[in-house]
Image 1 (cartoon, one colour):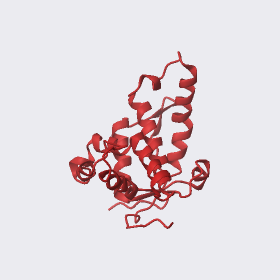
Image 2 (cartoon, one colour; image 1 turned 90 degrees about the vertical axis):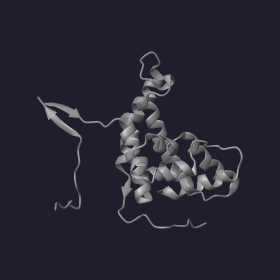
Image 3 (cartoon, helix red, strand yellow; image 1 turned 30 degrees about the vertical axis):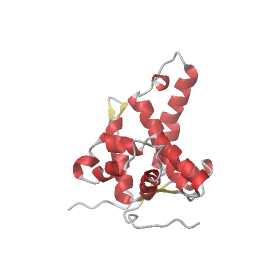
Image 4 (spheres, one colour; image 1 turned 135 degrees about the vertical axis):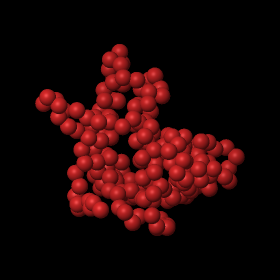
Amino acid sequence: MGRISENPTISNLFLVDEMTIAVICDASHVLKLIRNLLFNKGMIKMSAWWQNYFQLESNEIRWEVIEEIVKFQEKHECKIAPKLKAKTLERGKNHFGKMDVGCALSVFDKDVASCIEYMVQHHDYPMAYLTTAQFIYWVAHWYEILSCLYFAKAFSLEKPEVYAEVSEFLELNFPLFFASLEIYPDTKKPHAYAD
């Protein structure tokens, strides 16, 4: 069996006639991969640089925060993140659910990030939850751009300010953010945030 070295190098770039070619997965598959990674590992850490940039208390992005949203919303009639339900999280645990874009979209929705912020600001949930909210927001924003869900985010030189914002996010901020994430093999453990 093969063995991965301590510092594997993975690249989606190759050269053809001295031209750099990049292989890019479609946004829906990448979204599912990110959702499944967070579910399987339980925790991902963002770099200290991004933690400071976003002014966050913690650098831990945790799946348990998503589960807490479901519990929180079950107690309230009005749902801030109506697409995120216990049934959806349960479906995402099996093989076919992990391949379902809907399961990933229910997690990576800006309403989910807003719900976490609301829970922290108005219901005394730990400030550390905001790291997960920021991560969810950024992934949702990235998906909105790449999937062209909204005309306002479409690439067009008719709106240079939107074009510049979207280009900067896709070319600089998002790749640097994802490249700095730390993923550990043994993070799927119960964890309670310290107050």
